[in-house]
Image (cartoon, rainbow, N blue to C red; front, top):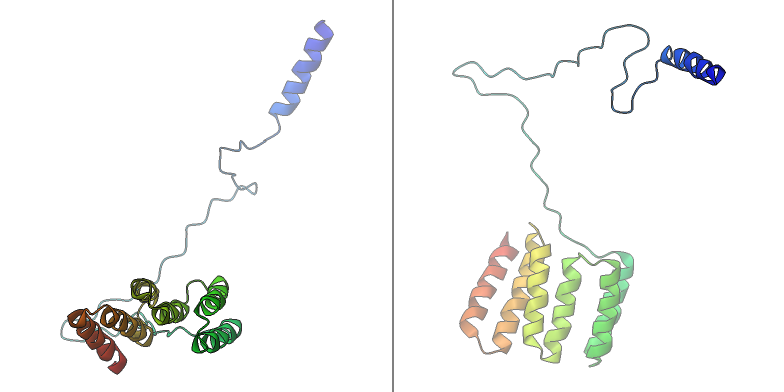
Length: 176
């Protein structure tokens, strides 16, 4: 019995000499060197009074107009042919396939809205256009197309004042 306590004592003495870092402590360098200070952050001095500050400014974000990928473009072309033939249910199914490929592309939502409008479902056409408008970001051409669809859906419901206002927004965005 004392022999097992002796063995444990020797084992503990041996282990206590080993430096095993705790998982809750940050490791210290084993070389004995002191930690290095972080490199100073480079700053640009302010311009002297009376002079214009020449520090570089943040780049102006580029407006990125959405476009269709090859697969979505082929599906939209197919859907337009189907809609022209009066197969609106098939055309909407084809555009929905394209939406599974590019779900956040506002151009596809506009195309689906055009099919809904051709079916005579002006409320859904407006809803698709508003969804596209929310996804268009700062792209004026996509926004203009969405407002044009909103205008057409208002006109289809006899809401001519709202249609005129939406068309004015579409024209303003198309000119920019």
